[in-house]
Image (cartoon, helix red, strand yellow):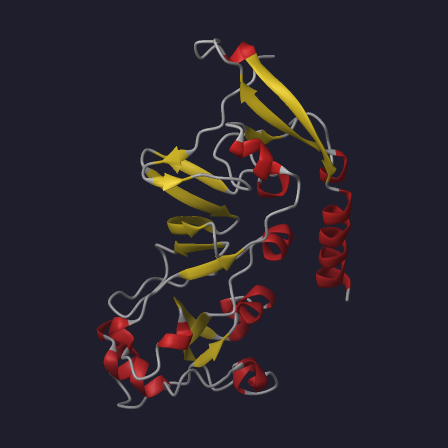
Length: 268
């Protein structure tokens, strides 16, 4: 069947390997993670659509924003952030993304058995969040005291839902190393995801004007051979005139690593 060209833009956001917004383009383990709607790019998970704010291909990070997440200026209904096991392995939130669990019960596991999951965040406190954010002041409106909260990492919300955590809301913010002495009204709310680029020789492909992709009918990731699609000169945009140059690097090693990590997450 005719080859489909790989789009390289969604609005003003560049779409480069390993990502894609067209099936069969990019790296297969990132398949269907991104969706382009009009000029807006979204990161897709089982818990919703998260608007992509930016992608830094040099630092290999993606900043996304959860439209259903509470922030300093708006209080949203109860919500969980959920990623699949594969997403958690190949593009997890980075270490400089902090989750704040808000309005927690005194019986919350992160305040008792798992209190070691909470950590000090650049000298900031629960009182500062509840007092410095218009949206969070409601939590202490009736008692004139601040309910417990917890600054924690992604692994906490990965393994425990908000119901299990016994906290009514959450928020998250990025670039936390530079937030010392800065009030919560000026924090950057969202999540920074960190990814790795599989070594498949795609640099050579893109430098030659091509785009890396794969056969969607092939099957499991470890049997997929990455292909370089280059539009043949003089084809006048005829996709049927595209050349297919198979790159010899397969995904055996990467798939084994991903499989091992997923096995560890589920069974260990």
